[in-house]
Length: 155
Image (cartoon, rainbow, N blue to C red):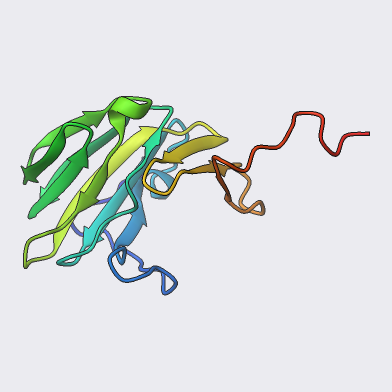
């Protein structure tokens, strides 16, 4: 049996993340050999967000492990504190952005089904992102107004 501690997991930071989105992440699901669930712990310094406002086509869940975060959702902003759990439903009603507006570091855990490819929609920037699932393939981001005909480029 593999195990990981969500309270002490080492979170890694990406140097390429821009200001406002500098959060550390630990892939807890991968660490314990999980395949059906994507489980990640995020460490959010003061003033940082996990990712832009978005929604996916699968449920996502969030539990606050330490500190407090503000979740922007279609119905407005809500503060969540240690121990609180929320579910973001699949589709536009589940749109969210998680931000630490406090002066202390916060730690959250997010989990969802691990289906690949995965699609995310970013309403603020009118983008659609596709994660193919193969580590060698890069995430594809396109603006919604960049329509391409189904048969375009096909021989």
